[in-house]
Length: 530
Image (cartoon, rainbow, N blue to C red):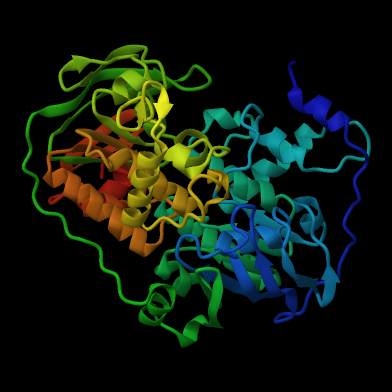
C-alpha cells in the first residue's frame, strides 16, 4: 500500500472540534489534580501514586522532580489521558472532568510530549502528525500539515524533515518530532517528560526559551527533569515526588539545589572522578566503515577508530550524524556496505548480534523499550534474555527458576531497581529510568570485555547517573573497553579517556579528553573546525 495512513484516516468519523475558550488570566489554575492514586496489575499492594495533589497555573513553568520510579511520568500520563486514575479527581478551569484518552485531554487543552516515543515508525513525520487530526471529510490534509510543521520547525528551531519516515530518524530527531506533534495542537497546558534528554545544550536552551514565551502568553507548562540547572533556569514552581508520594511544592526562587537534593534522595550526590587509563590490546577496531541509512543514503562514511582494553572512547555528536548507524553496524543490527569491524582481532563484519555478543560484547542500545527489552515479558524474563541458553540459567532445555530468581534479586538490589514482582510485573509498566537500570544490570553483571553504550544515563536521576558512572569506571579498571556514544558533553568529559567527534557520518577529530575543551568540541559537533 503506497499510503498506509490514508486508509486509516478514511475509517475515522468526523471529530469534535474543541470549543474556543476564553484566554485564561495569569495565575489562574488551569488544571488541578486532587488525591490522585494509581496502581497497576501485579502492583496493587504498592501504589505507584499515593494520593497526590498537583496543579498547573496559567503563565507559569512548573518543574516536576523525583528519582526514577517516583511517579512523575505516571502523574503526567494520567493528566494527559494515557493512563486512567485509580482514585482522585481532575479539574480543568475549576470544573471536574473525566479524561479517558489523549484525545479527551487535547480537547480540554492538555498535551504531553513523552520521553518514550509514541510514533508510528513506518509513517512519515507529517503522517504521524496527521494521525491525530480530526477531519471534516475523507480528505488527506498532508500538504497543510507539512506546511505548518515547517513553520513550527523554523519557529522553534527543531530541525526535522517532514517527509522522512520515523524509522529513518535518530532518537534525537524522533524527540523533536514528538515535541512538534504536540505543539501542532497549541495546547493551553503543555507537559514535557524529560524533553532535553536527547537534545544538545543549544537546542535545550532554545526549547526552554520557547516554553518561557508560551508561559508568558498565558499557557501552563510542566516539565519533568533530573537536571537541577534546568529547574532554576526555567521554572517558576517546583514539585518534588518521592516513591509515589508528594514531598512538597514551592516557588523555585525560594529554594536551592541542596534542599531539592535532600527532598529527592535524602542527601547530596557527587559524581565520581576518573583516573588515567591503563590501556591494553585493541578490543574494537573499525576500518573505513561505510553504512547506509534507512533511505539508502550514506550515513557512515569511512569511519575508522579503535578502542583498547581499559579505555573509554567517547563519541560526541548531534543526533542524526551517523552515530546510531555506526553503533548498529558494530553490534550486528545494520549491514556494513564497505569496511570492517574487528572484535579482539576477529573479523565480525555483518555477523549476527548473537555471534557478536558471544565475543564478549555488552550492548546498551539507544532505544531501550524497542530494542533493549521485550516489554510484554516479565522483568525476570528480560533479565535472562542473553543467558537463558547457558548453565546455570538452564539445564537440558529447562529453566532453572530458583537460580534465575536469586540472580535477578541480586541485580535488583545492586542497581536499585524498583520492581514489585519479578515473575508477574511486565517490563512495560516500569518507569523509563528503571528499564534503563535493568538493561545496565543485564549487560554488565558478567563484566564484558567490550561494551558499546548509547546514551547510557538517558532519563536517569542523579543517584542513578552516579551509579552508572561508577560502574563504567569500575569495569574500565578491570580492563573492559567501552565505546560511549552520548550527546551529553558533561558525561563525555566525565568518563572518556579519548573523545572522537562525529559530523555527517565522519570522525572529524579525535583528542585526549584531558586536553580537550568543551567549546571546541561543541564547534566541531556543529561542523566547524574550531
